[in-house]
Length: 190
Image (cartoon, rainbow, N blue to C red; front, side):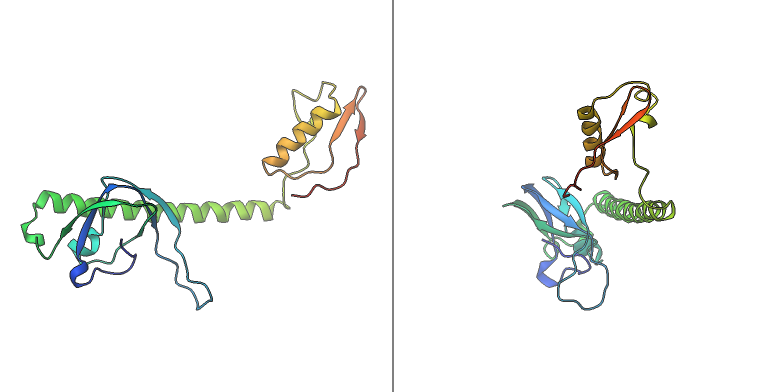
C-alpha cells in the first residue's frame, strides 16, 4: 500500500483508510552495504480497520515513515488528493493527521532506541559478570534449603529453570544432613 522512504508519485497520491482486513507495518530498513538479500526493516505491528495509510506523502509531500503491506485480503476507502486538494480539506482534519503522524513516528523512534539500549545493557551485564548466572541449587532457596527434596522434584525445578534460559549443570539433591547427591547425566540437546 505504501513504502517507507518513498513519496507518492503523480497519480499515486492517495490516502487509504482500511475498511476491512489487516496490514503489517515495518520501519524503513537500516542502510547497509550491498548484500545478497534485500534489507528488511523491523516489524512494528499490525494495523486494522479505521487506520489511515499513505497520508504523509499524499498530504504533506513527505517520505512515508513506514511500509504497509496487506496481510490478508483488504477493503479500503481511498481519497485521491489530486481530485480533492489539500486546500479543500478542513484545517482541523489536516492538523490532526499531522499530529498523529508526528506522534506515531516519534513513539516508534523512541521505542527502537530504548530496545537498542536495553539489549546493549543486557549484553554488557552478561559479558561483564563472567557469563551466565551461577548454577541454581535447592540450597540457594530460603524456602527449600531446609527441606528434603526428592530427585524428581529437583529435576522438575531444573527443567523449569532451563526452560526460562538459566544455565546449569546436572540436577543435585540434598539428603538429610546436607549430604549432596549428584546425578551425572549426558548433556541435553537444546
